[in-house]
Image (cartoon, rainbow, N blue to C red; front, side, top):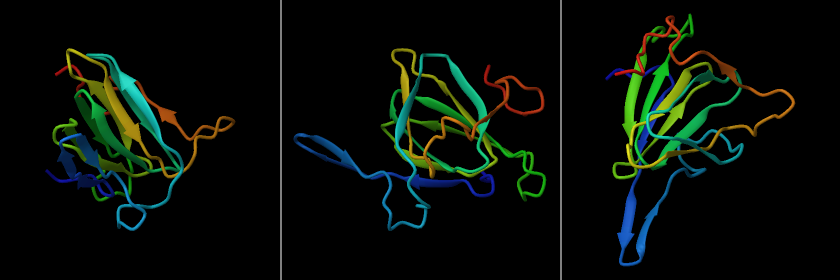
Length: 151
């Protein structure tokens, strides 16, 4: 798959032992690290789509902690080498990855685990601004975005 320009994928290493497991997610000394804004989690009930949105100022770093997330990305940037391209990923804790989503790229996810809510942890590069949120939304089924959440 051709990745949207600026999207980065980092496979995550899980270190199990008799007590459980440890998983490093993001380190300040890695090339994928840009800066730290905050950490939060978001959930989606089974079958629920949380899309589309993009940011003008922040990049996101997503990791699926619980459940299964069908992640969609769309590049609307006119000057981008990947303008009009979509990417999709199935994120699970069993095969953990971190997805870095650059500014101006639409993104969203659908909880696809039928038995539980899906939980995504995000490490954005800037803190959320309650007075002027850096969040721009589109309908999940916007016909201008060539991605079908109904599949």
